[in-house]
Amino acid sequence: MKELFRNFDFNEAPAEIITTVCGMELPEDYLEFMSEHNGGEGPIGNIGYGCFFRLEELEDCNTEYDVQKSWPGHIVIGSDMGGMLWAYCPEKEVYCQIDSCSISDDAFFDVSGSLEEFVRKIG
Image (cartoon, rainbow, N blue to C red; front, side):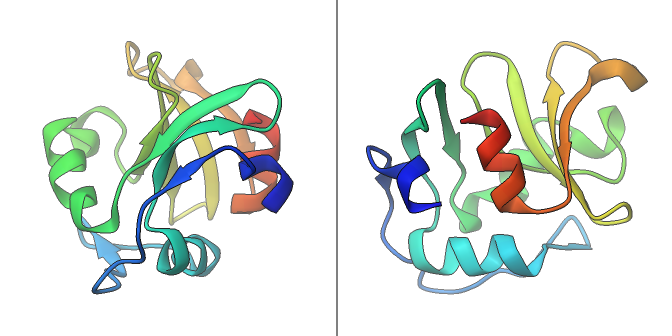
């Protein structure tokens, strides 16, 4: 994934690894990525742009977006900063983009089984 993040501005590694958000487990590949970078913001690949939220901000972000009411069973982990939220669904073990203006079933896009596959789709 290194080539996809060549111009991305990463944060410093987190002081503590948080493994659950809103009572749901974060996936291992995401935790591995975040343990080194703890999110950041910038271009992804040739066409993408976005922000991965810091681990320590995830609980507050998910509460602020009222994620469990609008998109039950999902954990928001970032955003394209243009209306699409990036999320993980522990029950289905998939990453996806969510149209933040919609709470319908067709609000989910770019469903992927791994963080790397998801980042490649958005980048």
